[in-house]
Length: 389
Image 1 (cartoon, rainbow, N blue to C red):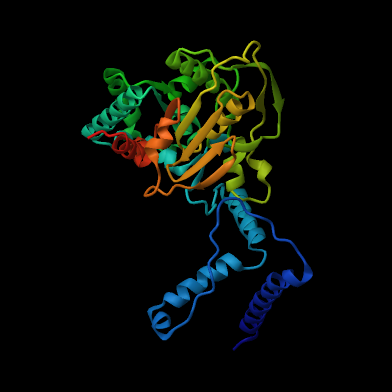
Image 2: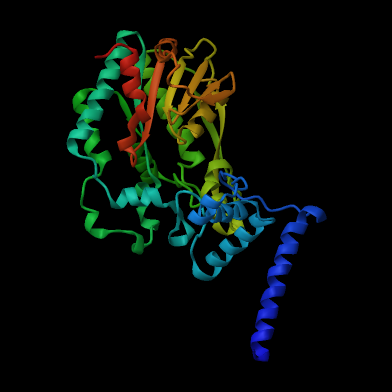
């Protein structure tokens, strides 16, 4: 073996040993790892057997165990992601929904961009059936004195398609009608009571002067969520024929530092210098409760839906719009206010009828890009519980 190869092998050996000592030794030295954002499932050390070894199962699980327990892995992940971002202009986060880097450093979840590209995939009959089940649920609830509202939330990819790079767009699909565009006329024809978040944010964007999504977030901005909450309260007043608690926007504060969900994708990118992915300005409403609302109607509400609802809850709870709120989060967890409890939903033992009948209003939320998952099974279970054949 020539001298050059020996030196190369020697340096590689020193590097591997050095990294091993450094990463394992960090526990001894007390060096703290950099945390990474997102939910991670730590792999347990695998049990070895001849069967699992020869099948390759042990080796696969061992790789996963090393990957999730390696010392200082958070720092190494962020360094690797930062290199990819700085030199290759790509986001290489391992977040379950791939993050796409758009123009002017706008971030998108790939799932929403896919929804923009592969629009109108649901068969028309399936859309019609879903609307009919919503109508049946509305009728069942009304027969029990409970109000119903269907809430369509928007998609960043459809509200701000102009920041998506051309390489991620399939132009031949742009002329097709989306599931959202096809379901709205069906809702109108059937008489399902709904509020259209896509239409609201499109109009808000057109009016200006502030953006309704942030470059660094995947959900509607806290600014636009505030104003949409006011629309929702007005819709609930029209529905219940009651005066509810309201709030007003006193001013808009401007800052360069995003708050909460306004930076959720920047956090999930897990790069060393997160601020590289922030927008230039962020806008936050300062609100106060309206006067003469002490005797207002504060309903007991059940919400079924996903993460778009959190920003609405913030304003509704800050100004005590409802007295109670139960949230069936993707119909998997029950999260209650003001009790502040959270637990998995045991559907087999859930007294769904009893839970529904204690409410004044039921709201089902679904994003325009995930209408195929409308209700997450809640609608069918609720109809069965309420006696619909």
